[in-house]
Length: 173
Image (cartoon, rainbow, N blue to C red; front, side, top):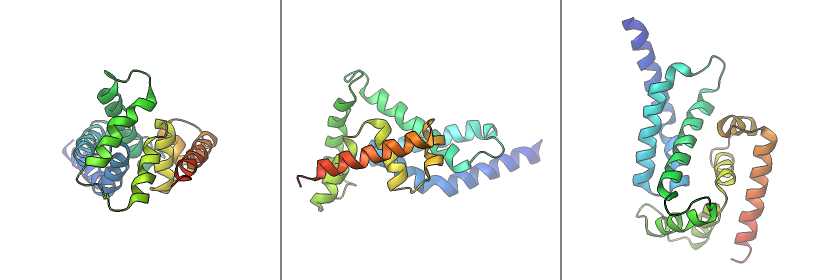
């Protein structure tokens, strides 16, 4: 029994070591604030620890970890904005943009980069998630589909819609 627990802890420690940085940045791009990203990351690793045994044989560990992180982000976004912005996804952009402009960890020296980040934040949540996973994390559409609970075709469509919207938004810059 002790060996099994030790092996499980060892596996969890490896998952944390392997995914701490990429999951932090995945979360950070969605919630913007460093402090909020740290909080969501901590909740993500708590869920990973609680559900480590549920990882199915043959299931992508990376997709599984990203799915947990993505679900934690979506839950965080809903909890932060549900009282003020019920079912109005566009309205959630205001607080996130305010955070983008005021967060001390945000590099504000590059106006084009700031505008690019703003364009990403203006995307609907699913398109923003897919765009970040593909553009920044360079994940294949099949893995993005596993993370978001969609199909590879849907992930690809969301990515291309996101690219078009970002391009249109940046067109006036």
